[in-house]
Image (cartoon, rainbow, N blue to C red; front, side):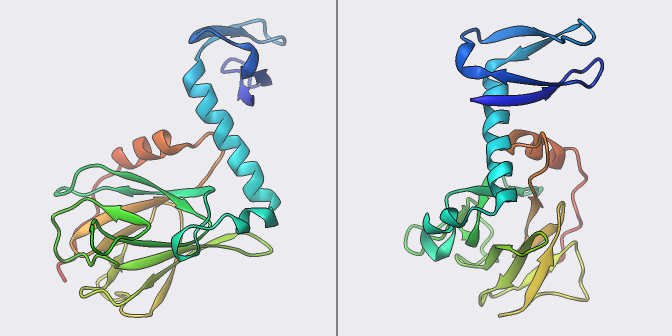
Length: 211
């Protein structure tokens, strides 16, 4: 497992073979500036996995489309959906390539991403976020699939999404499903599920639109 890191002192890129490292915490000396940095093996393994995902996403990998789960989503992570709401506990979910059906947690009517909430204004199958490849970039399309209360993007009261309406999402958008707000975070260099969650934690809550 190979990971690329930047020297925190001079910015030189360093490649490490994690399969040869057995210590849980260790120092790496930069061959250019000769200074050392402390590292945790678990953090670097997670970073290596994210770098591999990002590389596969950039290559487009036709074979990835063959690994299907419900509603056409694939097993490869291409972003995160993070609950960021005053009334609901913190939760982080991976987005997969293809269609991700999102809604309130339910045993009788499950979906791909089930948010554990008491918010009865959120439907059990509220919307779909589709991670769609294009020749130039990834697109993230959200579609209301017949929810009772619609969808609001970035607290925009004037343009709610209703049944079968689509919206284009970008990194950091706040999505209100019922009364519950979630934030979408997209893959970037050095970003993983934990860092994405920390970024969202540091943001202010968007205002809740009462539907």
